[in-house]
Image (tube, rainbow, N blue to C red; front, side, top):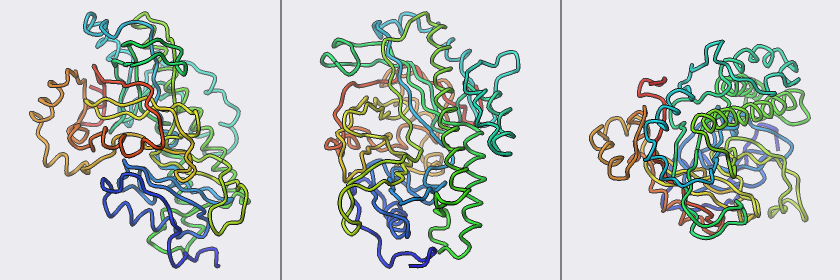
Length: 408
């Protein structure tokens, strides 16, 4: 098979929650499974259309990495900090908790701290910033944006976390706890890495069929593949540092010490061993698993699947399902595009929805209204063979970028 030639038919793959997934997402996944480097795939119940690979798509490829199958927000992730104190403190000290979100977070695509406000973290001096001209040019942006959040569906929430039974995973007794949950990624650093290498990959595959041009890949034997891999992993460490800084600042602002932390990223590629799929020999194969909007769910691995700005999400423990490539959904998943949401959901409708669930919103555009998302409990129900539910986490005060895309 020519390096550029697609398979005549897509490789088989499992779909979870098929009744909740639109035809366009299936078409995108089918196209990805025709790539000559593809080995296995899976589609999660929160799936919806993305660039190249659908959001909620999981793709395993052999000896190659696909920048757009990772996505433009490299290492976008969710982090939850649990405090050993009752969640009732949020309503008792509502003004303090709101003030902490307003003063200790910064939102928006261009959001950055002033020089005198910049937090510090070891990631800023990581030696890999000097590895390529592109990374050297992005180090100053990392200094500006460390500890900030993006626009769109990125958030920082004070939450009520409910444990129905004692949890050995979290080291906590049954009860309702104060929690902090954040969702964001590698900011402008990850975006520019993704744009640079995605364009380069497309240039290096000039005869690739237009239906999959966004899925152009780098063989790992190529210098460009090794460069992207290094840059992607640096963006992952930077995204982790962003969340760590945000959580440390907010914990100090309200005066509570963390009792447990759970974190996972869902736009990334991992080198993993999987059982060889049919037609690929026997035993295990080392593959590059791309999870674009999918949560790692290996056996015993903890992760977070949030709902919407008003709907509860879950802390989960993976069951390690081979057919799902050890993955699960990363959220509720959109059932409306941003344009559809803006055209069909009014501010009054959104605010009634929030009020009925006792949620205070700081910022947030109508394109992120909860009605634009699939019912999260349906998404969870469709994948109970992939994860065990450990705790429920309900937003109480939600901070997001404003409807103009910046801070409020």
